[in-house]
Image 1 (cartoon, one colour):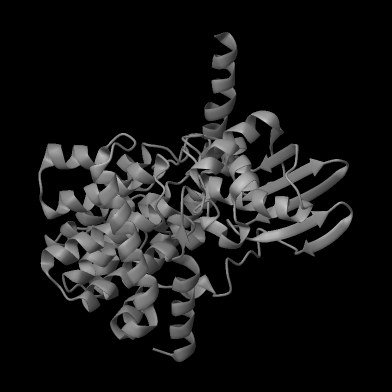
Image 2 (cartoon, one colour):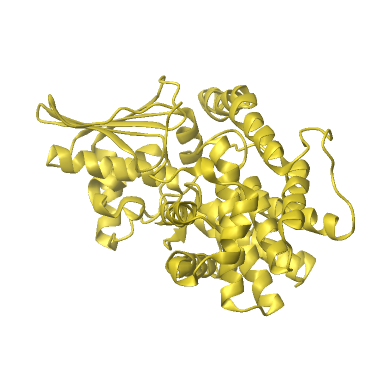
Length: 432
């Protein structure tokens, strides 16, 4: 593999597979709020959060970790302002003491919070303005969760970076260079020492939170229900572990995960099923790591065309990645993996994202099921063909079709989901 391309793939993994504690949208708010507090130089008494619809959707129903069970945009901002450590970015709320947790609730009651919907048209847009004693600070994040584009104190501009949706680049590595054939070549040829740290951390972190999801009383308990209902087959365990990680994470579990494409749920979906199958097949750690390279990079490839946030459930992309990684464990090459991905995309594309919440665990289980079924179809000589719905002739063409569906075709779906989640809920609350 050409060295420049090889180095790009390594860099993509390092940029994407990073630790985060808590659902990444409320954590992005907490991070931005912590930066705003540092910029102001004191604890503000007025806080205004302006957020794009997809952020509002994903913050509404999840528990913010280390807050004593608080939910929502104001709670996330309060936690970041009161107790967050901005230098830790997506682990901004990791080091909060019990005394600080109580302080967050007090501060949330005492300060004035206002939440507004952004009208910029940017899919990921977050502006946090904080005020006290005639002074103000503003912080803006666009494109992805830690991409600061503006820091301002009073009239002094401390950071001002131009951001464009059309020319956005997430991190420094060029994701457009990803394709399935070269992802497999990279997985075959990668020096384990180049990827051991980032993949090993994903294995350790995501396995730990999944095991906690199985043990504890988290969310809707989808992981445990799967095991209790459908037994201990490797296919069911793969679904259950991924779901259990989401059970814990969506309910505020104070353990980190290694994310993929800006999402902890996607990071767990792409990794945990592959880990379960690797253990079942008793393959070497090296072979498991190579399979995880396939799964993670296929997931990133699928998500690159879709974007960080959309109405298209990101777990579907990660489930396809998991199916690809599992196929690799069974000795599959380009042909087998390409057919697995196409089959899985044909099965589940169209599952909507209606925000981060407990039901994400069930969608993850469905995504993993589709990924494994996509593999099994090809093993038994069955497949979907070009012209079957959104399936095109060729893996890359099918991936582009799905990207267009999710990125462009589902924009109105996204608006309607947000309307249902916010406006109709407000009307119901007013009638009570």
